Image (tube, rainbow, N blue to C red):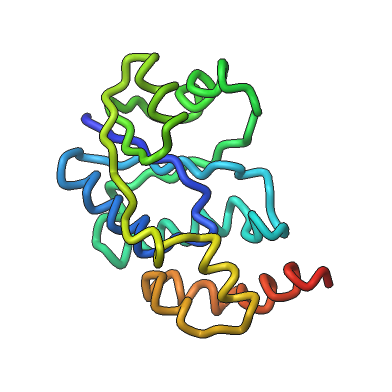
Length: 171
């Protein structure tokens, strides 16, 4: 089976991630989405748990009618670039290509012989988890247009906006 891999923190899963997923599935049978920093949660940079991010991915994939072609894999940070690719490979099903816009990811995976497909920024000015979280913290509502409807519903279910606001305020 031909698979491609994409690494992100998905804090939260947004429309830019959805577009990359579409591109992956145009070329490959399955998409492995590595959830980076899976051990972190309830911080400004990583307010959502690994499990919550898995759920966001599955709901978005279900909404896109590709749930059976998406494999989310939570991965802990090890903070050792020389071991990181082997760490990721040990936790994921086999894959042939890596979709990325990150220079370090490109360098490390290409050195291990993986095909690299550069995604380029997908409306980075809009589709940025950092920006979305800041909008949530500020009480702005237009962040809601930057995530897939199924993810928005889930974020509402878990009280994400309130959580992010409280984390940013240090409560």
